[in-house]
Length: 205
Image 1 (cartoon, helix red, strand yellow):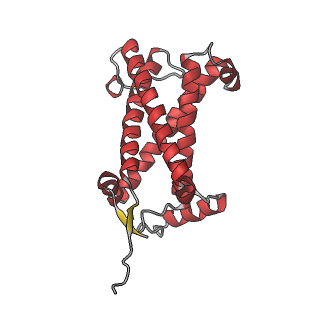
Image 2 (cartoon, helix red, strand yellow):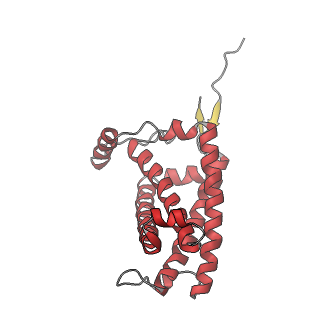
Image 3 (cartoon, one colour):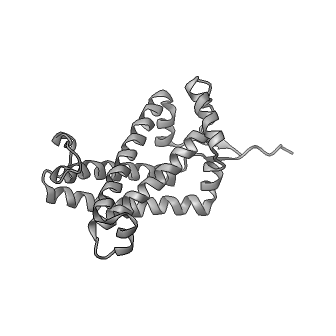
């Protein structure tokens, strides 16, 4: 009688890859159109280069921004629901602690953080992914206040009024751009992560 062989499952299942790339597309559209909206009424004494913006004019940028906002909100919600009910959220992103984050960060800075098992997230990755989920949530919430300030009075007051919501929205966007920049650097350092996010990968269980 033959011995049972180890089964395998996708560590980058199709739903994960699909929602990841759809989220990435929505985020790029939101950032580029958001920069064009920002240029129409800057918060600070600078503007973004027009070549990096989307929409051509304020009205066009707003249309792109709102379309991407709903796309991101719905697709992001699907991503969170599947992660939560499949158990993947707690299995892949927890536990996480300040001590563990500092330990893995120090190991990464010394080039001693392994990347052989891409199905296992180190604590720096866990913190970063949890942070970006929260950051995108703040972008959507503050965006709702900017879009429908009268309809969301409680959210408006919690964010410090309309101008406070603008500040929160801008800071959340800036932190998201910083995350993307670091994420791209890490992909360049470990290029197989990009390949696996495109074609998927099997792991033994």
